[in-house]
Amino acid sequence: MLENYSRICLLINRYESENLPKGSIGYIIETYDDGAYEVEFSDSNGITRGLLVLNESDMQLAPLSTNQKTLSKSNHVQQDRFSPVFN
Image (spheres, rainbow, N blue to C red):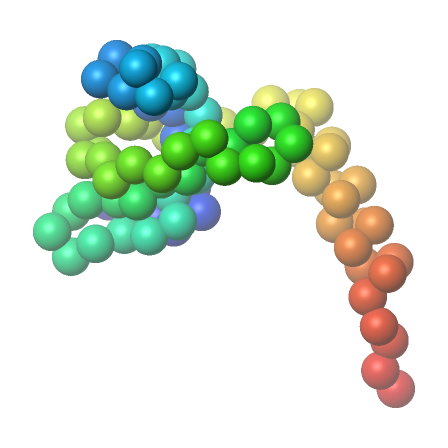
């Protein structure tokens, strides 16, 4: 079973007409009791391209690349820098 916030790669061509071809990267945002997953696909600006409900067989885990890990870490630092400090 996959977990919420897992990065996945779409394995099927069923959604090409919705601009979500096989190989599209998305993130699981909800898991359902029946084994389905709600997955959000976004562009490089963070704008949602699509939301799909998929079965586990429609996707596979997609590990982060080195560049994305670095970006994620720098975003985290930036967010911390602007977060309010409570004493």
